[in-house]
Image (cartoon, rainbow, N blue to C red):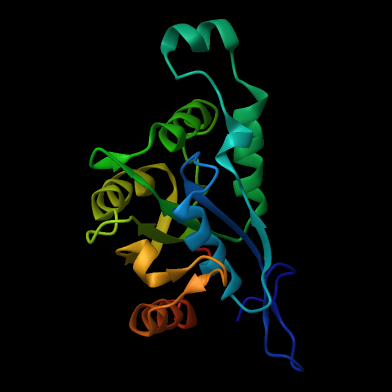
Length: 196
């Protein structure tokens, strides 16, 4: 058992105390992936949780020319600082044209110019959802290829299809029992310990 300050288990509550950062790979103000990430984060009992909004990390589209003009933007450093603060990450990727969104890829690109291992070897619960029946699995697969190359230690994944049918927006939780049980089981067995 890791008894560092960030990974303490109290005998009285048996709750894990860790810092959890959750966000959606989307800049939509009504992001369904942010709603899914927020719900999943709430299931980690005892975690100190922060929910990020990618709109707080908006930058011009990355290019070598813009980097020469702008240098290393403080906003990208702030994104890295948030990741470094956390013990684990919950990331729900939205899908645009069978890939990850520009909003996510752009801050990721800018941050990688300051630190290649953007995700800092943190354990990642990778999620996705969409209005359709495929559940943004193309974006999920793209993230599974990309994130590990930049320090994302993906420990588990979950995709929720047909968001509007399977998620209760007012209650802020998955309404389909089968999918909800599946996510809860993943979280119950999630290996949160950072390796290396």
